[in-house]
Image 1: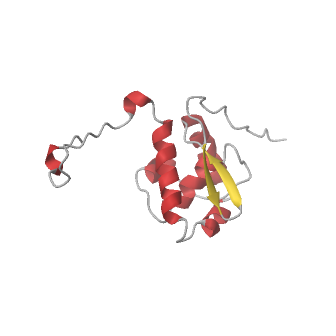
Image 2: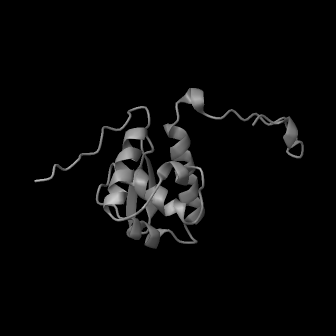
Amino acid sequence: MAKKRQAAAVDPTSPPLTIQLGDQELKLTFDYAALAFAEEKLRQQGHNVNLLQALGDLNMNTLPILITAAALHYQPDTKLEDIRSKVTMGNLLAARDVVLIAWLAAMPESDRPKIEPDGDPANAENQNP
């Protein structure tokens, strides 16, 4: 009998964020163990995904993949097809924002980007990368 892999413990310094998609509230986390588990689980569902690539290329196709991946730790029965059907034009921007906030929240504070505007939005060359 095949051994069923359990989700790894979530990093306690990376608390989950929640998102409401249709009638479903999902807890999202982007810590490393949860993402590795999610990538494996999505592949078992028949999806050829590369979460590292998807994280750097947030678009209409990768957004549902990332939501599914971030949700799998707390909701292991989450299916990509279900999430794709629940992301709509009405919740698209909120879903994108939650994914970005969850991703930044998962980063150690020392690795978070430091952006300090110079006060003049038209003068982008004086802003830190």
